[in-house]
Length: 140
Image (cartoon, rainbow, N blue to C red):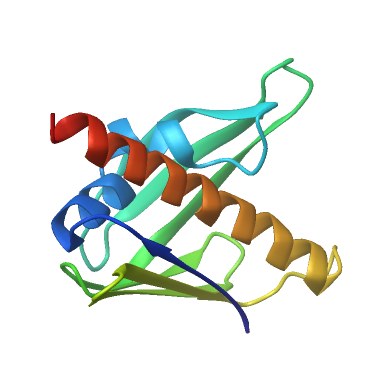
């Protein structure tokens, strides 16, 4: 498994909400500024399915990221199986520095693991930026 981590300076409730609600997912779930996520749906429960569309802003390519939840513990853990059968585990832990989000996933075989780690870390870094800015703007 490949693991990426980040600590988000926000409350556990906000981090969970920003991570799981479609209206937030569309604002952070992409690896670079020339991509976006125009669509997201999320049935956050064991056996529930999720799907988001990641697309190049210039329209040159897009793909659906989808799967089914195998474990959901609010503010703690999300586990799912992607459409291709790979497993993902995400943990959320409140610490004195913020919420530590740890994401572990089975690598695919098309791209080098370092490239996959970089892509998933970039998305997690996007999430951190979005969650921290959204938290600041909501507290005013």
